[in-house]
Amino acid sequence: MRRGLLLIAAAALLCAGAPAMAEKKTLAVVVKGLDNPFFKAVGRGCDDWNTDNAKSDYECVNAGPELSADSAGQIQIVEKLIDSGVAGLAIAPSDPAAMAAAIRAKAPTMPVMTIDSDFDRPDRGLRATFLGTDNEQVGALMAQLLMKYKPEGGTVCLQLGAESNEKINARAQGFRDAIAGEPGAGRLSETNGWSEIAGCPVHADDRIDLAASQMEEILAANPALDGFILVGGWAQFAPQIYGQVASTVKDKLDSRSLIVIGGDTLPPQMAALKAGNSHGQIGQRPFEMGNRAPDILIQLIKEETVEDRLHTELSQCTPENADSCLGK
Image (cartoon, rainbow, N blue to C red; front, side):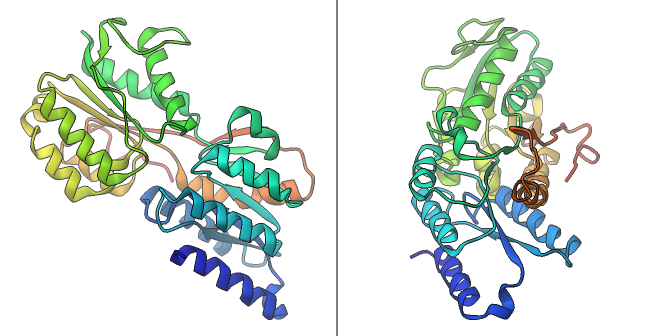
């Protein structure tokens, strides 16, 4: 059993055995993994909510498996939280279909919402609302930056996450649509001057190590590549490894013959941008997700009307505005 599961089990037992400590009702924010800086920022948002709402009847608790790739572990955590009777659940599902099946089987009576990643469309009736990024807009902003750097077009490779990751797939669609200038675009092939190279897109399965090795192999095998798009951050979350990969093409990065654009604006990614190892970062607001989720859950508990989809803001960061582009 992973440490994340042990922590949840221990917390549930503690609450069951100590009524005095159970006065605050639990609002659980379940992230994909505690190893990912993005979800650490979600957790900080949850913690900050507790600080700002010290007198509330509710407490925000951040939970998740140790590894983002452990979707089964995440489901076990959610099942334990439902069994323990938490007041509300905000879930960033690693495997949306599997998580939806687990929610359907458990039939929880408390409000359930999704954050960061939503359930697949047929399963969205299982959650009350979604809070997160407009992912097609993320992809569109990536494409706009690439076209700004390379108005003549060229070749590009998209690095995606798990094949079932709908939010990353939505970014890829937004990217292609922006290049094509119309919705519903397929794989780029001489589309307004842009083509995706053979072997791409690649799927990193949300694994930092795999993402770094894929990037290194693709850049080595395609020396004339014009653009590499980390549709999620992945490789950039391991700054030492990412720096080593970037060093192999540093001359191309400096001359901007190769343009690298990544998703998210976490500290190691902004450091890479400022070091010239990236030309653009499209930032989500993970802190905002963790910080807003408790208030939305309380609205749902009170049976107040909440919109079906709530979007957080985005940051578009380049070397020129790197010191001023970020929000929380």
